[in-house]
Amino acid sequence: MRKILVTGDFEVESGLFPYGYELIHIKTPIDEQEILDVLPEVQDYILGGPEYLSARFIDTATRLENLVVMGTGIASFVDIGYATKKGIRLANTPYMNIAAVAEFTLAMMTTCLAKVFESVDGVKKGTQWLQTPRPSLSTLNIGFVGMGAIGSEVAHQLHLRGCRNMQYWSRSRKVELEESLGLKFNALVDIVNCVDILCIHLTGGAETRHLIDEVILENASTNLKIFNLSSPAIICPVALKTFLSDNSEAFCFMDGYYNEWADNEGLVNDEHGLLHLPVKSLIVTSHIAAQEKETINKIFAHAAKRILELGFDSASNE
Image 1 (cartoon, helix red, strand yellow):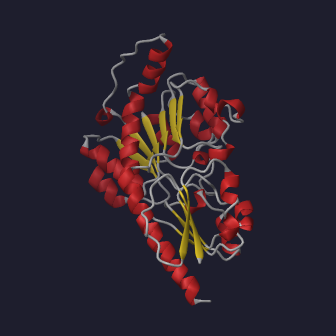
Image 2 (cartoon, one colour; image 1 turned 30 degrees about the vertical axis):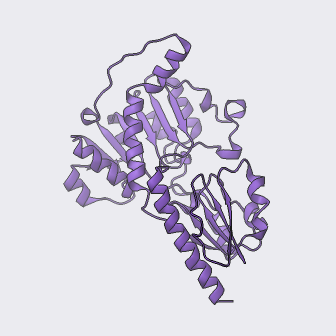
Image 3 (cartoon, one colour; image 1 turned 120 degrees about the vertical axis):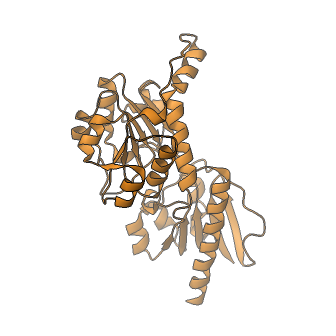
């Protein structure tokens, strides 16, 4: 009997896995120990929850053979080098969350530009009845960091809404997109100085860690609005805190934080000090951009199919 661990806050259809598989589904793990307790028994693993499969997890998962990440960036959820060294086969579900993340990005841009979180805060405290007119996305200068599948979709949606002032930085130029969407390729240090919004859709990793640092933010417009829908580590936290603290009109939205899930203790113990900033300066959400119901169902179906294929290969090689 092969044991398959599934993590993630979604429903798993009964009978999805054939005879010979025993399902362990942890929908909303409370802490790392809840997962560590079952890992020694598991051969197959669909990672759709908030956990990171570190070396400690991998050493505990002594029978683990196959792992599928419900997402594109495996490195954000798995110590790839150590897992590969241990002979664990890795797979992901690429390009299935594009529409959901693009929709969420546009929604957050509109929400934050309308100062919704400030409005909520003012109403609750009884200190402010905010009714500041919000700018239309179509009138703004928008810059992109990364122009992969998600960034391209966001740019396309903005173009449909009438946005004609867009530029981007990417590790490779996208000439066709430049022509079809009127995008301008530019250096990152120049983009941050002349756009209203900086939208980050870039794969996280060693190459992009602290890509946006003190040098970049020192050259940024003092009212720059940053929307980071990628790894938080792309922005240096020290540089970000300084930038937001020194510029009262600047703002940053991040879907994810430097300390996440079990490591996040909120305001009680925030080593970076960013969470103490007011909502007018910073809003952080818990990696929810791709959590659109139908998208998650499709991603899980794909992950389940892939894990069965990997399991079949494992059995064939025994």
